[in-house]
Image 1 (cartoon, rainbow, N blue to C red):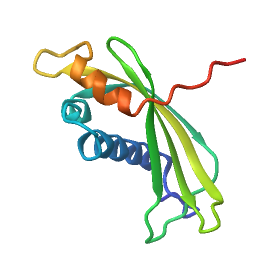
Image 2 (cartoon, rainbow, N blue to C red):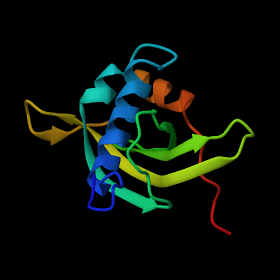
Image 3 (cartoon, rainbow, N blue to C red):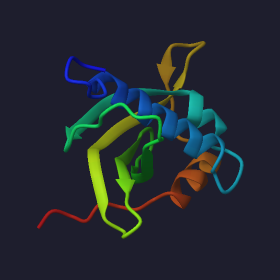
Image 4 (cartoon, one colour):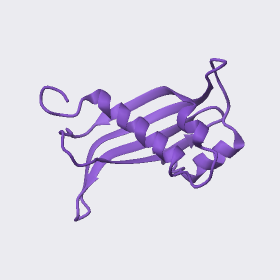
Length: 131
């Protein structure tokens, strides 16, 4: 927490990682995403802080999905939020992460395998083209 009792900005990035790993390891519709859950490196994070999140015992909801799949990278989007019983959503942050599969033993990036692409495509919600 910061001095005002808000969740520290760095903690949001931890939340994104937990969400990403959970999505690819636990909630993947088929096998094949496990290596993407742990065997990737972050190329870029973009976080837009929308409203302060204060410490509380209740969990926060994180929605995550894939917006782009390339030959050797993919982009994920996230919203950290609460959804009220009346359907109103309070968004605390929106984020994007570009990731690349990585061979840690050889210290080099690699291309996305076909079975990994199939898993990622199940989570794909492409961003609308800018007008």
